[in-house]
Amino acid sequence: MAGRVVLITGASRGIGAAVARRLAAEGDTLALVGLEPDELAKVAADCGPEAGWWEVDVTDTAALGEAVAEIAERYGRIDVVVANAGIAAPGFSRSMDPAVWERVINVDLFGVWRTVHTTLPHLIDSKGYLLLVSSLAAVVHIPGLASYNVAKAGVEALGNSLRTELRHLGVKVGVAHLTFVDTDMVRGVDEHPVFGKVRTGVPLVSRVYPLELAVDKFARGIDRRSRVVHVPGWIGVMKVFRSLWPYVVEAGSRFSVPKADRAALADIEARGRAASSRASGAGGLADSEIAVAAARKVAG
Picture 1: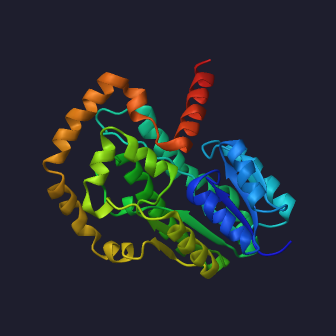
Picture 2: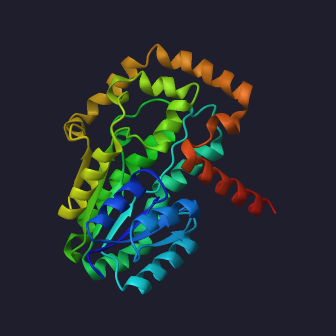
């Protein structure tokens, strides 16, 4: 078995799938974790005969633990973990579906924590590398994505804490910060009748960068076991001045948010709160179906 054994969550689509394909092409062995089994199988087929896939919801601690145990048993080790699974659900906190708001936190923050907790014993054994996927949203908190902002800020804090906690054990920890990259999730946000206009109206985040840029940055960061990965590089400069950005966002949103707030209420009235608040993109739809099924099971 050549190269490293790399476990990636959220590997069905987008950045997770593209990074998996790149690393496989460079000789690594991929363990793919995510929803949408048909998509996972396609990505695994592209990653070579040694690649495997596991259909797992990262909010299910037991299922995730079982998958990690199977991966470790199958390959004998885990060298790299990319905690990438995430969703985004646009909406203002006062009016969007509270269950969806909380689901974003559960997937994007607690899902990362569960991934860390279940894989860490294997990374300690291999003195491996852990990359947590945060976002520019941890630094610049644009309106209409509060739950996403909160989750990604938490991921950054978790990564910074783990980096110090694990250094003496030989495990390196990186945190990736991305602006908007051309993925299904971002396209889904832009298709929202209200919040697509909110995002594209904010100069700092109006541009969508090509997926290949993120793949290059991630692959290089994993190779170097980097402490940070910035997509694009100017995010590193923005982090230095992070105390200023709330004032910039507040000033820039002074007139647009009241208008968007009224539009959001009208959209909820027209389409219903569930449709207006749903997580974005094909991956978001798959996650919504999982969440609804789980809620029905709990309800009996």
